[in-house]
Amino acid sequence: MREHTIAAIPADGIGPEVIDAGTRVLASLEKRMGDVRFHVETFDWGSDYYRKHGVMMPADGLETLRKFDAIYFGAVGAPDVPDHITLWGLRLPICQGFDQYANVRPTKILPGITPPLRNCGPGDLDWVIVRENSEGEYSGHGGRAHKGLPEEVGTEVAIFTRVGVTRIMRYAFTLAQSRPRKLLTVVTKSNAQRHGMVMWDEIAAEVAEEFPDVSWDKMLVDAMTVRMTLKPQSLDTIVATNLHADILSDLAGALAGSLGVAPTANIDPQRRFPSMFEPIHGSAFDITGKGIANPVATFWTAAQMLDHLGEQDASARLMRAVERVTGNGILTPDVGGTATTKEVTDAVIDAIHSSNV
Ligand code: NAD
Ligand code: MN
Image 1: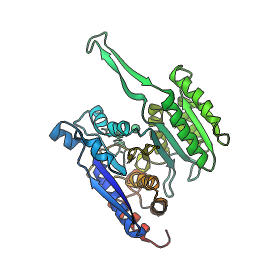
Image 2 (image 1 turned 60 degrees about the vertical axis):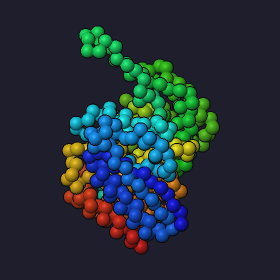
Image 3 (image 1 turned 180 degrees about the horizontal axis):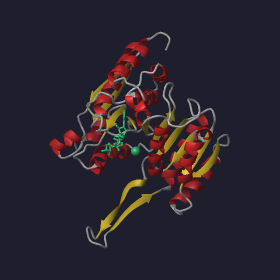
Image 4 (image 1 turned 180 degrees about the vertical axis):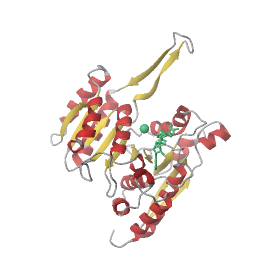
């Protein structure tokens, strides 16, 4: 029996609704596969914890998580707690503390989902966005001077290091090489930002030498939004900075039909620490408690987690089950259906147990 320990942090808003659906699906995979065990322990960290204790997680939170094989994360964000507190109090400390420098965001159009673009169906849009997840624009450097005065100045400093850019570039080229089309697009804004961004371009060219079988090109981030929308077929693997990829991957999720189907993995490729798996979306307080949150992103990221844990068969079975269910039109309202979170989850569990999935 193979065993994996998973720390679940459902956190805020629809986070608990989708993580609950995800842990049910993991339990059904355990039954179906028969040779693997997932020991899921759930932590009550997040905005409720903050209201009680003044912090999003306990001081020894990272030490606690460190013992797990993977982290399964819901979402943070609450109407009455500032976003920079929820984000910097829980999600970013985990990403940065565990040096999860590669943020991997696959996007494709699932069967049964009508994307917003005309003439675009499954097969036309099949991307993986690799987001630099440890530095760049979210390094936390910067400050404010003369606060509140007319002459106030705020700086938000983007930090790019040779080590940081080289390792994400190698990760992206390696990933592109593993995909059938072996195609990588490197995104920057090196026309207007002429220091760190030019360094990105230079390091991309250097790392490319190590991957002669990968074709690669460069795009400026603004032009990239146009290419994603008008020529989705021309893209495959994409690498971009922390901020640029954050924005591009929300666009990618929307182009694939909904943020509710977009997953993400925060990976420590060196496997020194647990990696973290989550849907891209936030806590979605506009639909919290209504039972209609789309659980597909949370299932898809569970498949990413299973892959990372070496459970490729379970991962592939889960994705086939999800595609069967979306293909059968069992969809939540965000992707044009009428099903509830529970109905989608039950259908995925049925498909996992079905003999021809
Ligand atoms: P959001 O992703 O929570 O919601 C954006 C829109 O998409 C909403 O209309 C929402 O209903 C819809 N949506 C999102 N996920 C869905 C799902 N699974 N099923 C159906 N519809 C879904 O983004 P927001 O509204 O900008 O932010 C809400 C809160 O979440 C804020 O506090 C924000 O800071 C936080 N946030 C957290 C994360 C994270 O934890 N990783 C990411 C983004 C936003
Ligand atoms: Mn985002």
